[in-house]
Image 1 (cartoon, rainbow, N blue to C red):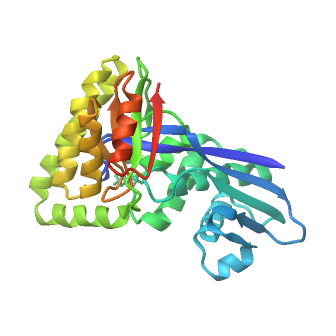
Image 2 (image 1 turned 180 degrees about the vertical axis):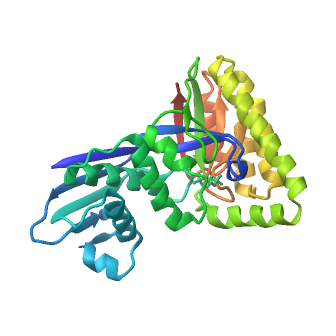
Length: 309
Ligand code: PMV
């Protein structure tokens, strides 16, 4: 048997503006992961077992139903240049909540790419994994920036500019963020399309907003690398205000953001596509429980504390 894992991820700064060429920062969330196990097949077929989403079927049946998993596996086999599907049993499990901005689908793709490449006997570099994962992303997200597949592939803090080689960076001083889920699936595709429509109508106005977001992401990287982590709080607040302007926040996200700030978080913002999904808050040392309790009281469906280092 062979196993492969890929972590979750969270965007710290720069979502949406990243689609327009501005930099964004994202970090892996290693407490969460997708896992793919490959075993011998009981017959000549490829079997897919994904108990979290209630799937046990042959690849052939899934392909007939145009199931997303079959599609992704097809993209991976094609990209790896494999000539035939192997008689294996692919078991997919994940602890990453779905559609909440934590990279659940992308992590499954990346764990699948690595597991299938090893099974076929083709070593793949991170760069190749990233390219194939981006192909798989495009099938579902239209025109994604590529930040999700990049941070999950490299599993390190990433400074990302669309179309450029990713840069990794390190925090000089570790810091803690709370990640809280609204419990509402994030309609990322719709949010991205709406921002695009607004940009098409008033390009200059929105490019000015995206440029400000890019400036925040650049400043945040500098603060993280120089160990001035408290300075990230106001940057989060500013970034959240600009995301509100882009109409991608929601009453639920704003409520969690306010609750975290009132409980002592140094700053807070939505994370990812918005209108649902997760928000993040910068938690000063010793305030973890307080912030967590406030987020719970404000209706968070799930809370996770993660340390960036
Ligand atoms: O919802 P998420 O975490 O997958 O993030 C989407 C990020 C956007 O910037 C809104 C879109 C993109 O492709 O970068």
